[in-house]
Length: 147
Image 1 (cartoon, rainbow, N blue to C red):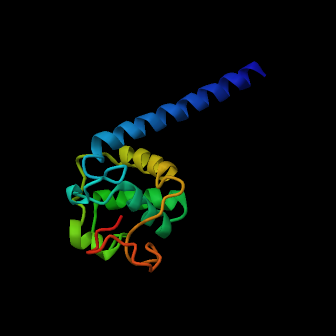
Image 2: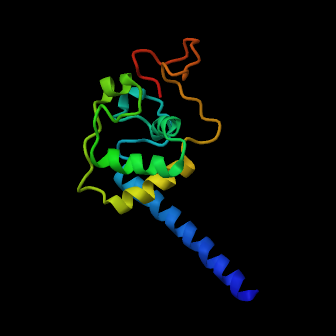
Image 3: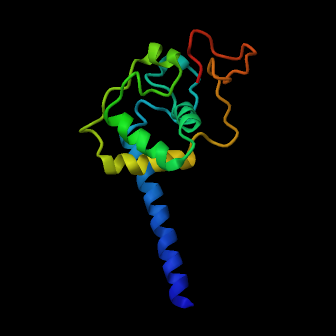
């Protein structure tokens, strides 16, 4: 019984360490472009906030394994045809530049898994236009700049 408790403790600590490592990797490799909260000045954005990105990823790939595979592939070989975001995002920000050489596939798997588990936060309501995101009630940000 004591061995089982120790194994469970080690497994729990390993999961916690991997989550911390993935969070650190995201902050080092992704957060300079993909912010984790809605800024007060939307004009400062250079890429869509990660909560909106992950909302669209999960709408397209609800299965975690498929979502992680998509993220790993897209970040290394992005293209307009693969994009899951709204067309307004590509019009505003362009297609994400390839991060091949800046982040390894193993790092991307850790980051993507962590993102899937943590974003968007509970209660997130996208403010974009189209795909039901604004509810058709004029709640988008206008000019294709919603989250």
